[in-house]
Image (tube, rainbow over all chains, first blue to last red; front, side, top):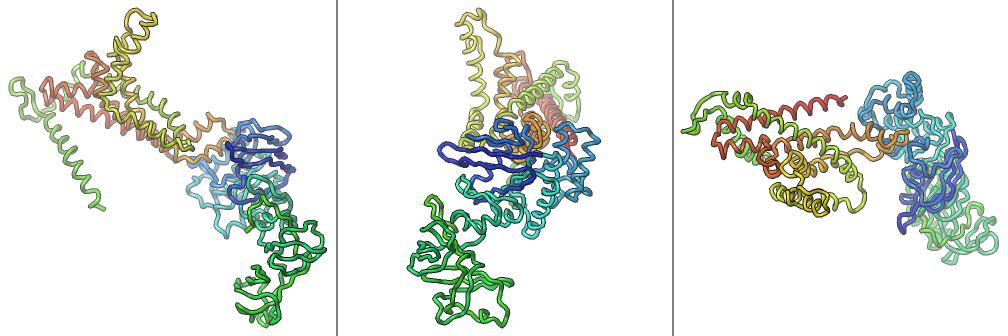
Length: 355
Length: 275
């Protein structure tokens, strides 16, 4: 049981900075996800917690103990590797029992805890198998059981779902989350998949270029992104350049004026609107034009143009008698949103363009 | 598929199997001081070789030398191979090439170099005398130790390259997982790296053992006239003694010993860790 504190943790390789002053405080039983594109420093951060990489500066504190200079085997973390990293020459039971053996747990007690951990991941019937005789999903559960069985102070998950097929991913994600909650495991997880992070984590840490851009709940990040990178990385987002005029009018670069939320403090920047907040209606006098539409069953995507800007709108597919069902590429449309749906985000010059 | 391996099969058949069959036949012939070789079918040459204390001694020397050199080469080669396998920098290919460079120097040339180093007027003795540490030259050359050192220097690259390719196939994450679960570096080696590298270690040891059993140039040049191993003994019979039947019998005894020990070692070690 434990807490995890990162205090100004940095890693430099010569001139290059992989991780720049990351501060993070994870409470007992909390699941925090490091989210970002590849090369953002999230994996380096996780490996510094595990002790595989030594920080250039800063402290790693687990359960109140400064472990910054301790080797991996003295840190009391339980890591699930992206590749699972099972011991190929040991049975499932021996894999799970390895950490207990290292902790000098007696034979009888060890067997009991191995059985319990395997029951927890529903693999009790396969304890004599070798890893290569298991499916990918089963191997992953062995890796989970192996890390759980030692009751580590901090549980570390490195892209835990990335090697599973899409169907299994959501299911296993929920299963891990359920286990983590039930056992009250303090967990740090790394992922590049925003859906995974949103579904599993109590708090998310969005990273880019080794820096933390925003820390918050899924709702914070999605509805109140601190910058355009977060807006573009967590969920899809229309980002329109321009300047705010008055309290609730935003002047686009092309000169057109559109409504925006009055609460924003920034003047210049990007107007961020989630695609599902945009309404589209057929209107011969409308200012917008439909360039293309994609029917996705439950949803329909509209690729629009408004005052020279490309905008994407997503709605639940309208009913068959809805006039929107008769829209075709090239049609003029009316594009609207409630002012609260459009937030002005200050432009950070250091940021790379959001996608 | 068969067409692809046919040329290689033909070469092996012509250059290896053919001569071996011929040699086997010769080993069953009789030696005569006047006619050199008389056609016969007798096991007398083998019986003579096994009964002769001198050749029993040569065989013992060869076995002790081969086992010792293989063990020392493994002990020296494993850490180096591990380091090479786990190298991530751009120096890796350079180090690999550096490991191979000793193979560019032939055994005879290398042994000649050792003469200059270990001889009575060689670099080591000259230095020791120059520093007045010794007055008489130390007997470094023409000793079993010199042969062992020379042989190990020859076979070490083979061991390192064989081992490093096997260690490279062990994912780093597996070692990290063991460390993460509380295993010290030594335990990670004992419980993860060693058992997973074992098939490659056996292969490397077999390769090196065979090379050591058949040491010729190093044994002759660094061992001197009092030191005799099997391969030079075989050569002596063919060139100096002109006793081809006996030489052929010695050659087959060497071959059989190497083969039996290799197969036995592979089977024993393979079974011990097989699951």
